[in-house]
Each structure stands twice: as structure tokens, then as C-alpha cells.
Length: 193
Image 1 (cartoon, helix red, strand yellow):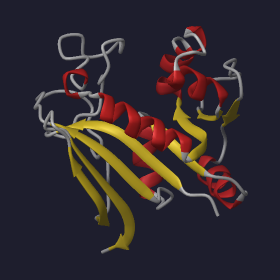
Image 2 (cartoon, one colour):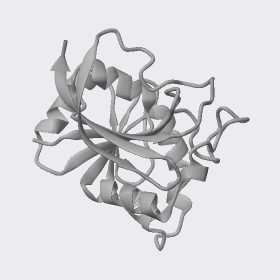
Image 3 (cartoon, helix red, strand yellow):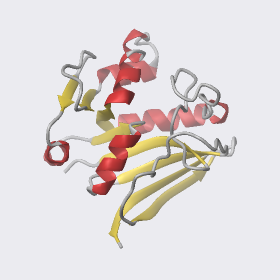
């Protein structure tokens, strides 16, 4: 059975929106994660990607990635991996997805993702895709959360766990502190209480 791993950057106040300088939202705050990136963090991200054979993306994240990664040279290890992975795109509005190796999921998303988890293969990674993460959390479909917490407070922006309607209990399985003050916290699903 495949596992779904949600990996994302988040601020101390829970904001996950616009961590990169190329993001189009939160113009005054975008790029907030970049001062905390190190080569060690780059290796962590590549290792996380190598443990997966597919990405699961919401529409907004997909559109941002599809406008950027296909145009990066394959010599860039991130670009090569992003372009090579199978991408499952969850959307109720898109009719087609053009980025290489992309597949559209619409209709009963929960049922389709539960089926994906039953297929053979490696982990399925979610990057960004806050609304999708919130929806899958409600249905207990995410197996692990890898949160890169940046030591910054924005005070505004979309929060990772903003729309949760039930308490979720998670189990800490890994923690690591980086020289920039960024902390990686990995939690696995531990049931509801």
C-alpha cells in the first residue's frame, strides 16, 4: 500500500502560502522560506522526492508548477525530478492537464485517492496544495506530514490547518533543526480523538 506524504514549508503562525519568490500571492511577504534554505535543505527535499514516484497536487499548485518546471533545464536535479514524476492533479475546474506525466482527478476525489493508495508503488508526495491537504486530512488519507517550520511570523496568509472540523492526533516520528533555525517536524497519523 502506498503512503501519502504531505511536505510543506510553514511559518510559526501556520501560514503556508507563497513560500517562494516566484509565487503570485502575498506580494509583500512572498519568498519567506528562502532565507532559511541551505544545501542541506536542498538535499532533504531531493531525498523526499526520491522516496516518491508521484506527486499529488491541487489545481493552484499544479498551475504554478506547470508554468515553471517544464521550462527549467534537465541538468537541474529538481527540474529533472519534477518533470519526470507522475503528477495527479485534483481539480473540479480543469478539463485537461498538459504538463508531461500529468493525470487529472475530478469527481469523487476521496475515492480516487483511496484507490491510488492501494496501487503498487512508492510514496505519493503532496507539495503546497493547502486546500487539498485540508480535505485529505478530514478523510484520514494523509499518512505523514513533513513540515519545514521557518522561524518567521507573517500575520497574514492561508494557514495550513485553517479549515479542520475535527481534532486530529498525530505522532512525532522525526525532528531536526537546521543552522538557519528552520525545523523539520515529521508526524504520522495516529488516529482521531
